[in-house]
Amino acid sequence: MGGSYGGYMSMMALTKAPETWAAGVPIVPFVNWFTEVQNEDPLLREYDLATMGDPVKNKSLWEDRSPINFVDRVQAPVLLLAGGNDPRCPKSEAQQVADVIKKRGGTVEFKVYENEGHGFAKVENQIDAYSRVAAFLKKYVPAPPCGCML
Figure 1 (cartoon, one colour):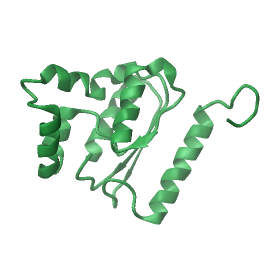
Figure 2 (cartoon, rainbow, N blue to C red):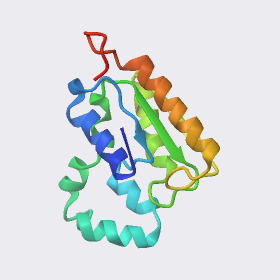
Figure 3 (tube, rainbow, N blue to C red):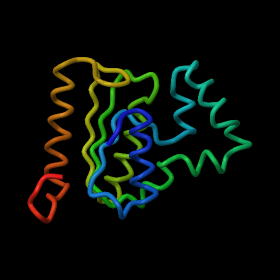
């Protein structure tokens, strides 16, 4: 579970080591470097290009670092949370993942907070988001075998 870059890392973990995870909760993730730089705020685009290099010259790197290219490997249920007005990680990033997982019959829940940006500032949305996360994890992550809390 994580937000922003943590959401990206959650998606990388779910796609690169799928057998490891019982569930995943990417919050405001980016999942496709190619669409990310097309749809994000122009200043953020410049930062990403400086970090990742040219998408044509470094195409193989961009492809390998884009979890969307490996979503077919996801085995765990996924809860995606996104902001409808996110200039950093547009909701279309999470939508791509939800669409692929649904198409292949996987378990995915997707919630967009239309009145939020990159993260959830409104208290009612924070309560809703973390209530969803708690219910999702309780449903899909098994309790430890000893019955104890870790």
